[in-house]
Length: 397
Image: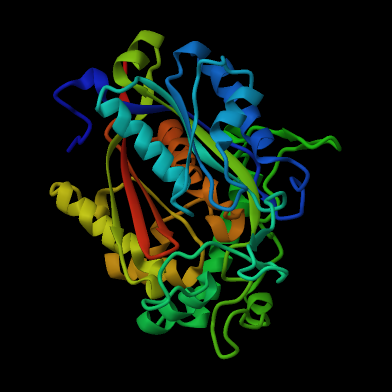
């Protein structure tokens, strides 16, 4: 069954280009590159390769979670040389920010509020400013803190790793399963990189010391023995380690979302149509299972949709424990998701990660899929939120 038809088909949102930077380890290969300078080369690549007129871009929507505030979308648009008339807006849904930016662009097209949007996300942990709380008393020292609050203390607002431990215990996810999943992610990512599968979606970044062209984090030499030797990071008697969790990362990702009518006028042959999305909240203490609630909500909205029939599923791998618990609850076999590796291997640049999921779907489905093939992007978010989006390959001309 096709989900792509809409009564006013010219206003169906379609992703027609999707690019990302290489993903660098925090304080690694991209450590000196500011967020706007991660985004700007992608903007220029999309404009150059699609032939879209810069002045036709209605808005630039960019997700960012750990940056210094302000409007990074506007800063990046101007840095890339887009016309002054092209605006920009920054979006913060934490780890889901990049996916939310794409969903918002698609919803704007559905509402006929525009026909051409750049959307995605960026994170530079390496250049993000320190956060300090203003002293409550005159002369007192400021308090440095790592992240914003996501939930009131009366409910619980655990750190991400502690929340992953909560999920592992609540859903019976063993250390061995987590390590096996992490090893599988690295092996898939290394294999995909060696086969050149990431190359078409990556925009190289100049650091002043040379070009960065490859993801920094996939480890070809990791093993079950090496993973088993790692100690728990968050709880002394826990199961979440640096090996079965994502690293801290720098990176950016943008897609071009346009109306189907504009795509036809540009002569674009095939695209990834946005069909629907859903967001849902869960207990912040078990925030990693947010995608279970959002996916079930999407299934209610799309009663003809079957998870077993999805052509490609990209699930953000913040922690192996939360991915496995969510997949178990949704009855999705773990070996059917992230077929070219996920964030445990590739990295998790918070604000960009949701957009990277869509870019990974685009690469797999547009290059290898047939019209009617579907893709699903799922991500869990701090504060106990899940976000799920459904896409379908469509022929445009």
